[in-house]
Length: 298
Image (tube, rainbow, N blue to C red; front, top):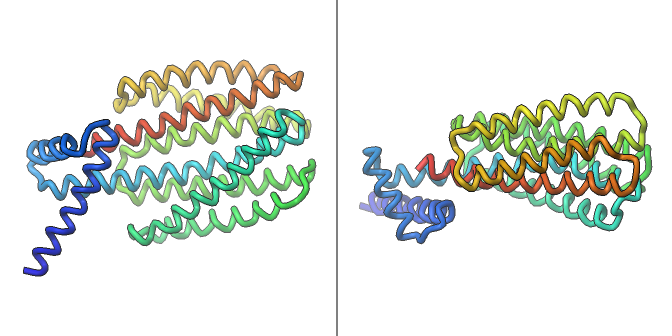
Protein backbone atom coordinates (compact mmCIF):
# COMPACT_ATOMS: atom_id res chain seq x y z
CA UNK A 1 0.00 0.00 0.00
CA UNK A 2 2.88 2.36 0.87
CA UNK A 3 4.62 1.59 -2.42
CA UNK A 4 1.39 2.23 -4.29
CA UNK A 5 0.88 5.58 -2.54
CA UNK A 6 4.47 6.61 -3.24
CA UNK A 7 4.05 5.67 -6.90
CA UNK A 8 0.89 7.78 -7.16
CA UNK A 9 2.69 10.71 -5.55
CA UNK A 10 5.58 10.40 -8.00
CA UNK A 11 3.16 10.25 -10.95
CA UNK A 12 1.42 13.34 -9.62
CA UNK A 13 4.71 15.24 -9.45
CA UNK A 14 5.54 14.35 -13.06
CA UNK A 15 2.08 15.49 -14.13
CA UNK A 16 2.29 18.81 -12.28
CA UNK A 17 5.66 19.59 -13.83
CA UNK A 18 4.50 18.53 -17.30
CA UNK A 19 1.38 20.72 -17.02
CA UNK A 20 3.55 23.74 -16.27
CA UNK A 21 5.86 23.03 -19.21
CA UNK A 22 3.02 22.48 -21.70
CA UNK A 23 1.06 25.50 -20.42
CA UNK A 24 4.12 27.68 -20.93
CA UNK A 25 4.89 26.22 -24.36
CA UNK A 26 1.30 26.60 -25.61
CA UNK A 27 0.45 29.80 -23.76
CA UNK A 28 -2.58 28.21 -22.08
CA UNK A 29 -3.83 27.53 -18.55
CA UNK A 30 -2.74 24.44 -16.63
CA UNK A 31 -6.27 23.03 -16.90
CA UNK A 32 -6.03 23.22 -20.68
CA UNK A 33 -2.54 21.72 -20.52
CA UNK A 34 -3.93 18.82 -18.49
CA UNK A 35 -6.60 18.20 -21.15
CA UNK A 36 -3.92 18.33 -23.82
CA UNK A 37 -1.76 15.77 -21.99
CA UNK A 38 -4.71 13.49 -21.24
CA UNK A 39 -5.79 13.49 -24.89
CA UNK A 40 -2.22 12.81 -25.99
CA UNK A 41 -2.02 9.84 -23.63
CA UNK A 42 -5.33 8.44 -24.87
CA UNK A 43 -4.31 8.92 -28.49
CA UNK A 44 -0.97 7.14 -27.93
CA UNK A 45 -2.47 4.44 -25.68
CA UNK A 46 -0.02 5.37 -22.92
CA UNK A 47 -0.36 6.18 -19.25
CA UNK A 48 -0.70 9.86 -18.42
CA UNK A 49 2.30 9.52 -16.09
CA UNK A 50 4.43 8.16 -18.96
CA UNK A 51 3.50 11.06 -21.23
CA UNK A 52 4.16 13.53 -18.40
CA UNK A 53 7.58 12.06 -17.66
CA UNK A 54 8.53 12.18 -21.35
CA UNK A 55 7.60 15.87 -21.55
CA UNK A 56 9.58 16.74 -18.41
CA UNK A 57 12.66 14.77 -19.48
CA UNK A 58 12.61 16.27 -22.97
CA UNK A 59 12.43 19.74 -21.43
CA UNK A 60 15.37 18.88 -19.16
CA UNK A 61 17.60 17.62 -21.98
CA UNK A 62 16.64 20.55 -24.23
CA UNK A 63 17.51 23.05 -21.49
CA UNK A 64 20.80 21.29 -20.73
CA UNK A 65 21.75 21.41 -24.41
CA UNK A 66 20.85 25.08 -24.54
CA UNK A 67 22.91 25.89 -21.44
CA UNK A 68 25.94 23.98 -22.74
CA UNK A 69 25.50 25.56 -26.17
CA UNK A 70 25.58 29.00 -24.56
CA UNK A 71 29.08 28.22 -23.27
CA UNK A 72 30.30 27.82 -26.86
CA UNK A 73 28.93 31.23 -27.78
CA UNK A 74 30.18 32.96 -24.64
CA UNK A 75 33.74 31.71 -25.17
CA UNK A 76 33.81 33.64 -28.45
CA UNK A 77 31.78 36.62 -27.30
CA UNK A 78 34.13 37.42 -24.43
CA UNK A 79 37.11 37.60 -26.81
CA UNK A 80 35.13 39.68 -29.30
CA UNK A 81 34.21 42.17 -26.58
CA UNK A 82 37.81 42.33 -25.32
CA UNK A 83 38.98 43.07 -28.88
CA UNK A 84 36.18 45.60 -29.30
CA UNK A 85 37.26 47.39 -26.13
CA UNK A 86 40.92 47.43 -27.21
CA UNK A 87 39.90 48.98 -30.54
CA UNK A 88 37.99 51.68 -28.69
CA UNK A 89 34.67 50.68 -30.28
CA UNK A 90 31.68 51.40 -28.04
CA UNK A 91 34.06 50.74 -25.15
CA UNK A 92 31.71 51.24 -22.19
CA UNK A 93 29.07 48.94 -23.65
CA UNK A 94 31.74 46.34 -24.52
CA UNK A 95 33.03 46.27 -20.94
CA UNK A 96 29.51 45.98 -19.53
CA UNK A 97 28.62 43.13 -21.89
CA UNK A 98 31.92 41.36 -21.19
CA UNK A 99 31.25 41.35 -17.45
CA UNK A 100 27.69 40.14 -18.07
CA UNK A 101 29.09 37.37 -20.31
CA UNK A 102 31.53 36.25 -17.61
CA UNK A 103 28.70 36.06 -15.09
CA UNK A 104 26.61 34.17 -17.64
CA UNK A 105 29.33 31.51 -18.02
CA UNK A 106 29.43 31.08 -14.25
CA UNK A 107 25.62 30.74 -14.05
CA UNK A 108 25.52 28.13 -16.79
CA UNK A 109 28.31 26.10 -15.25
CA UNK A 110 26.44 26.19 -11.94
CA UNK A 111 23.30 24.88 -13.67
CA UNK A 112 25.18 22.05 -15.39
CA UNK A 113 27.11 21.11 -12.26
CA UNK A 114 23.89 20.81 -10.22
CA UNK A 115 22.22 18.59 -12.85
CA UNK A 116 23.42 15.32 -11.21
CA UNK A 117 21.21 16.11 -8.23
CA UNK A 118 18.13 15.62 -10.40
CA UNK A 119 19.33 13.46 -13.31
CA UNK A 120 22.08 10.87 -13.51
CA UNK A 121 24.67 11.93 -16.09
CA UNK A 122 26.66 9.50 -18.19
CA UNK A 123 30.43 9.20 -17.60
CA UNK A 124 30.98 10.87 -21.00
CA UNK A 125 28.93 13.91 -19.96
CA UNK A 126 30.66 14.13 -16.58
CA UNK A 127 34.12 13.91 -18.17
CA UNK A 128 33.26 16.57 -20.76
CA UNK A 129 31.85 18.87 -18.08
CA UNK A 130 35.02 18.54 -15.98
CA UNK A 131 37.16 19.65 -18.96
CA UNK A 132 34.85 22.61 -19.59
CA UNK A 133 35.18 23.76 -15.97
CA UNK A 134 38.97 23.42 -16.07
CA UNK A 135 39.17 25.39 -19.34
CA UNK A 136 37.03 28.15 -17.92
CA UNK A 137 39.23 28.47 -14.82
CA UNK A 138 42.26 28.89 -17.10
CA UNK A 139 40.42 31.51 -19.15
CA UNK A 140 39.53 33.39 -15.95
CA UNK A 141 43.24 33.70 -15.11
CA UNK A 142 43.91 35.38 -18.46
CA UNK A 143 40.89 37.68 -18.02
CA UNK A 144 42.40 38.95 -14.78
CA UNK A 145 45.38 40.37 -16.71
CA UNK A 146 45.49 43.85 -18.27
CA UNK A 147 44.01 43.91 -21.76
CA UNK A 148 46.63 44.18 -24.51
CA UNK A 149 47.60 42.43 -27.74
CA UNK A 150 49.52 39.61 -26.05
CA UNK A 151 46.77 39.13 -23.46
CA UNK A 152 44.24 39.04 -26.30
CA UNK A 153 46.21 36.32 -28.08
CA UNK A 154 46.32 34.23 -24.89
CA UNK A 155 42.64 34.86 -24.26
CA UNK A 156 41.75 33.69 -27.74
CA UNK A 157 43.79 30.50 -27.32
CA UNK A 158 41.99 29.72 -24.06
CA UNK A 159 38.64 30.55 -25.65
CA UNK A 160 39.35 28.11 -28.47
CA UNK A 161 40.13 25.43 -25.91
CA UNK A 162 36.91 26.19 -24.02
CA UNK A 163 34.97 26.12 -27.29
CA UNK A 164 36.32 22.67 -28.15
CA UNK A 165 35.43 21.23 -24.74
CA UNK A 166 31.98 22.88 -24.81
CA UNK A 167 31.37 21.32 -28.24
CA UNK A 168 32.23 17.92 -26.79
CA UNK A 169 29.89 18.53 -23.85
CA UNK A 170 26.99 19.43 -26.14
CA UNK A 171 27.54 16.29 -28.20
CA UNK A 172 27.77 14.12 -25.07
CA UNK A 173 24.49 15.58 -23.78
CA UNK A 174 22.77 15.04 -27.11
CA UNK A 175 23.95 11.40 -27.18
CA UNK A 176 22.87 10.85 -23.56
CA UNK A 177 19.39 12.25 -24.22
CA UNK A 178 18.58 9.55 -26.78
CA UNK A 179 16.34 12.08 -28.57
CA UNK A 180 17.39 12.75 -32.14
CA UNK A 181 14.86 15.58 -32.43
CA UNK A 182 17.04 17.67 -30.08
CA UNK A 183 19.60 18.04 -32.89
CA UNK A 184 17.82 21.19 -34.07
CA UNK A 185 18.50 22.88 -30.71
CA UNK A 186 22.19 22.05 -31.05
CA UNK A 187 22.15 23.37 -34.63
CA UNK A 188 20.38 26.61 -33.73
CA UNK A 189 22.44 27.12 -30.60
CA UNK A 190 25.62 26.73 -32.61
CA UNK A 191 24.57 29.61 -34.84
CA UNK A 192 24.91 31.94 -31.85
CA UNK A 193 28.52 30.84 -31.49
CA UNK A 194 29.29 31.30 -35.18
CA UNK A 195 27.92 34.84 -35.14
CA UNK A 196 30.17 35.80 -32.22
CA UNK A 197 33.09 33.92 -33.77
CA UNK A 198 32.69 35.86 -37.03
CA UNK A 199 32.64 39.16 -35.17
CA UNK A 200 35.64 38.14 -33.06
CA UNK A 201 37.65 37.06 -36.08
CA UNK A 202 36.90 40.29 -37.93
CA UNK A 203 38.04 42.47 -35.01
CA UNK A 204 41.12 40.34 -34.29
CA UNK A 205 41.98 40.63 -37.97
CA UNK A 206 41.99 44.41 -37.61
CA UNK A 207 44.19 44.25 -34.49
CA UNK A 208 46.58 41.42 -35.28
CA UNK A 209 46.74 41.61 -39.09
CA UNK A 210 46.98 37.83 -39.47
CA UNK A 211 45.88 36.54 -42.92
CA UNK A 212 44.69 33.23 -41.45
CA UNK A 213 41.94 35.06 -39.57
CA UNK A 214 40.45 36.39 -42.81
CA UNK A 215 40.60 32.91 -44.37
CA UNK A 216 38.61 31.51 -41.42
CA UNK A 217 35.74 33.90 -42.10
CA UNK A 218 34.83 32.30 -45.43
CA UNK A 219 34.49 28.88 -43.80
CA UNK A 220 32.34 30.25 -40.98
CA UNK A 221 30.07 32.19 -43.35
CA UNK A 222 29.50 29.02 -45.36
CA UNK A 223 28.79 26.95 -42.24
CA UNK A 224 26.32 29.51 -40.90
CA UNK A 225 24.50 29.73 -44.23
CA UNK A 226 24.17 25.94 -44.55
CA UNK A 227 22.84 25.65 -41.00
CA UNK A 228 20.35 28.47 -41.57
CA UNK A 229 19.03 26.68 -44.66
CA UNK A 230 18.59 23.48 -42.64
CA UNK A 231 16.66 25.39 -39.99
CA UNK A 232 14.42 26.95 -42.63
CA UNK A 233 13.56 23.45 -43.88
CA UNK A 234 12.99 21.79 -40.50
CA UNK A 235 9.47 20.36 -39.99
CA UNK A 236 9.29 21.82 -36.47
CA UNK A 237 8.45 25.28 -37.82
CA UNK A 238 5.53 27.20 -36.30
CA UNK A 239 4.29 30.68 -37.35
CA UNK A 240 6.49 32.21 -34.63
CA UNK A 241 9.51 30.20 -35.78
CA UNK A 242 8.95 31.14 -39.42
CA UNK A 243 8.77 34.83 -38.52
CA UNK A 244 11.92 34.58 -36.39
CA UNK A 245 13.72 32.77 -39.22
CA UNK A 246 12.83 35.58 -41.63
CA UNK A 247 14.18 38.15 -39.17
CA UNK A 248 17.35 36.08 -38.75
CA UNK A 249 17.80 35.93 -42.52
CA UNK A 250 17.55 39.72 -42.78
CA UNK A 251 19.96 40.22 -39.87
CA UNK A 252 22.39 37.74 -41.44
CA UNK A 253 22.42 39.76 -44.68
CA UNK A 254 23.21 42.91 -42.69
CA UNK A 255 26.04 41.16 -40.88
CA UNK A 256 27.58 39.92 -44.13
CA UNK A 257 27.56 43.46 -45.48
CA UNK A 258 29.11 44.75 -42.25
CA UNK A 259 32.00 42.28 -42.48
CA UNK A 260 33.11 43.97 -45.72
CA UNK A 261 33.22 47.51 -44.30
CA UNK A 262 35.55 47.88 -41.31
CA UNK A 263 37.43 51.02 -42.33
CA UNK A 264 36.05 53.25 -39.57
CA UNK A 265 35.07 53.14 -35.89
CA UNK A 266 31.44 53.70 -36.91
CA UNK A 267 31.48 50.68 -39.24
CA UNK A 268 33.14 48.52 -36.59
CA UNK A 269 30.44 49.59 -34.13
CA UNK A 270 27.76 48.72 -36.69
CA UNK A 271 29.32 45.27 -37.11
CA UNK A 272 29.28 44.67 -33.35
CA UNK A 273 25.65 45.76 -33.11
CA UNK A 274 24.78 43.41 -36.01
CA UNK A 275 26.48 40.53 -34.15
CA UNK A 276 24.42 41.23 -31.05
CA UNK A 277 21.19 41.58 -33.04
CA UNK A 278 21.66 38.31 -34.95
CA UNK A 279 22.70 36.55 -31.76
CA UNK A 280 19.44 37.66 -30.13
CA UNK A 281 17.50 36.30 -33.12
CA UNK A 282 19.14 32.88 -32.84
CA UNK A 283 18.70 32.90 -29.06
CA UNK A 284 14.97 33.49 -29.49
CA UNK A 285 14.82 30.77 -32.15
CA UNK A 286 16.48 28.29 -29.81
CA UNK A 287 13.81 28.93 -27.17
CA UNK A 288 11.04 28.59 -29.77
CA UNK A 289 12.48 25.25 -30.92
CA UNK A 290 12.58 24.10 -27.29
CA UNK A 291 8.86 24.82 -26.90
CA UNK A 292 8.06 23.21 -30.23
CA UNK A 293 9.91 20.05 -29.20
CA UNK A 294 8.11 19.93 -25.86
CA UNK A 295 4.77 19.93 -27.66
CA UNK A 296 5.98 17.40 -30.22
CA UNK A 297 7.12 14.98 -27.52
CA UNK A 298 3.83 15.28 -25.62
